[in-house]
Length: 255
Image (cartoon, rainbow, N blue to C red; front, side):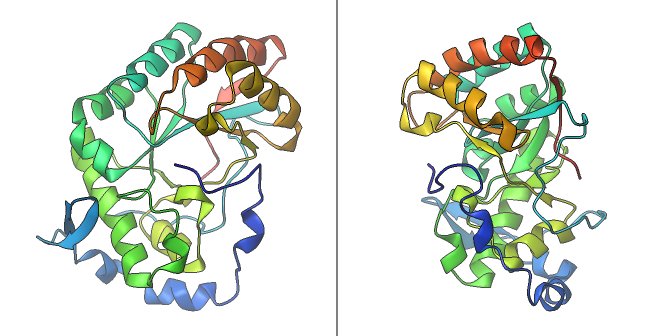
């Protein structure tokens, strides 16, 4: 479910001041209090020590590792047992790799799909446990739990493959949430093209939005869960070949 508007409308909210202080406050110790999930809310539970990971930049990534004519296909809110398989099949047909931003709840519910995503060569992104688009108005402890519990749930569902990025639900980043993610090797991930597919505007509208807004930057936001995604599937069926015809290559967000 999206809170965001178009493109980078949320990006200006992110304030870098005091980020260094926040980074110091976020050590491995912040990961010691793991949680189970009850009714979509993280609850205190068994602890788990984090694996050794390399800290990455806390700045929000938009660029593609495929270069100036590269694009990043990013798929949010899944996995979903109805729509994710259809998206995966399309990506296979087109030979395209994507970044899947998974919620902890959905990953835990559908581990087979998470493993299928990984087996197909796509990369994983932490999209929080419960997709709370008001996370930026919650306590730092709450933000940490949502991010770190989702990391654990996704990693367990995948069979040990960790998410490489963190995308805040609705773009609700804070300096603290970016620092937490970066401390765990997850680069904060933004977007340049918001297809608005979540609003179900019609496949034609989704395709036109991609064509119109792609000059804004290479990272394109789609959804494979949270409602009827037939329009998204149809739009992807048309967008992926068009991108190839226009000379774009497919990559992953820079880390």
